[in-house]
Image (cartoon, rainbow, N blue to C red; front, side):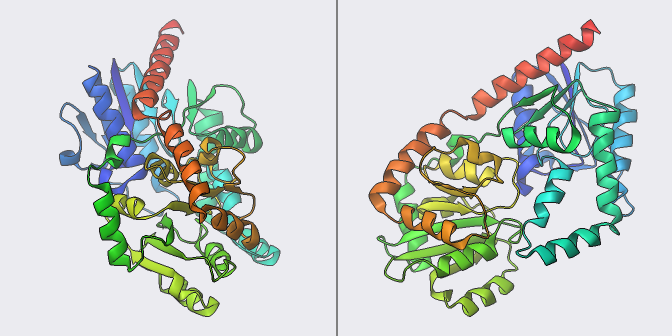
Length: 387
């Protein structure tokens, strides 16, 4: 089949959707399909041979206009190139399949308000959005994608996102859940124990210390502030450290840790190009996010056999072992979050949960994901021919 993928920038080193599109393109080429990529920029050295590239002109202008321009360029190009199936991954329209890696804009906009701890701060933020042209433009673009030029099929990466389509857009048909996945081989190492010891030595952490890992670029949305407040509530007799990885700009949170009197329990590592070894050095992941359609860091953690503490606002929470109180209802509830951390500081309990997470990770492999994606592509291709 001739398959077209549409995404503005495909530079896998940036992670997220770009890494996924790179993996998908490679798998499609290896399966014998003709793959075309519509993009403004890409890293050809990181993409497999055999992809046919189509350059979309660099998109300029205000932020609220740029996605519209890219979408229109893609639509015009799609009309000029015969193809079996086209797939869009973000703010585009007119493709046969839409697989929004970041979920719904309207849901994200609502959940972003939850990061504000008080009702007054949420109200003020909501008022501010009335004067935000980007928010208005992206909401209109979302309706264009799913209501005005509906695709043959919508793929979402969690049941949570599927519910959001019903809640925010009133859509319930044509929506299929295809969970995100990782390649477990990326998190395998024969010298894992040696890596673990080296990481802990660099962190000045003993082998008996329970280490929780937090990885994010957007510290605010992913709940670092409430996490630090939860750490303050962990009893001093529990040997616990929190390792923070991601954004290099962490001074605000370092100051918060100092004010809370927990700076001796927090290790800020800043940006790490490849955080794999941080998983190896840690005992569990803490991801108290306010919005994640299906967090890749959570999937990576369970792929490494690490238990994950997260929130109901993370689609990946649907994959975690049930009845172990790993999913927090409210990230701002410091008692609930700290209690979950304390439970995983108990090594026998943690070992049991870790084994369950490893077993779950084997069910959501890249191979299984790609097989399901191919099924959707074939069904949409057959549907197009029949109509």
